[in-house]
Amino acid sequence: MPILQHLIYEKKVSIAYVSINRPRSLNALNRATMEEIRSVMEDARDDDAIRGVIVTGAGDEAFAAGADITEIASLSPIQAEAFTRCGQATLDLIEQLGKPVIAAVNGFALGGGSEVAMACTLRLATENAAFGQPEVKLGAIPGFGGTQRLPRLVGKGSF
Image (cartoon, rainbow, N blue to C red; front, side, top):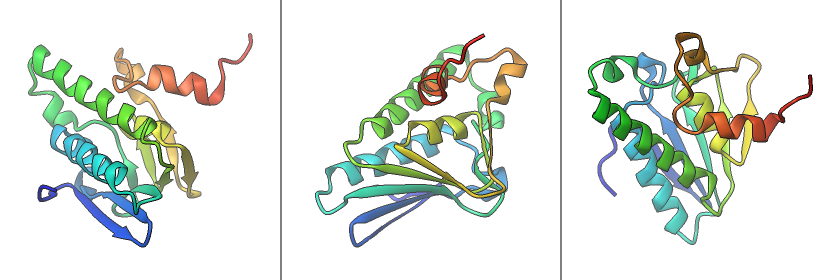
């Protein structure tokens, strides 16, 4: 397991705890954070002693307030595609982990943060939790699979 810079990862008894630890940026998801999430999820998946995973955000303001806009702004189109594919692969791994993954949502779960929560087996939210996909107001789509996961979770509705 590599040294983690953006996560706190602990195993207690049979539960793996993953905390996105970038509270100054409201736990924004940059490429390094997504790669660390993938790494710890693979570790939890492969550890037979682990029976489930709980994912949360450090601090009390945000679970994860979406992709790290400062990083995205500096990416070339090819790098942006690679970042999106990294996010998609990470969330696919969470969704198909083979063990329950619980999102403990404390505060903002926006954009990519909302997509992380949607990839989990179950979402538990505090009273101050707020979910959203604000990128659609900018003409962008939820790039980590949210366009597919959201209608599966809440239904398409009828008009």
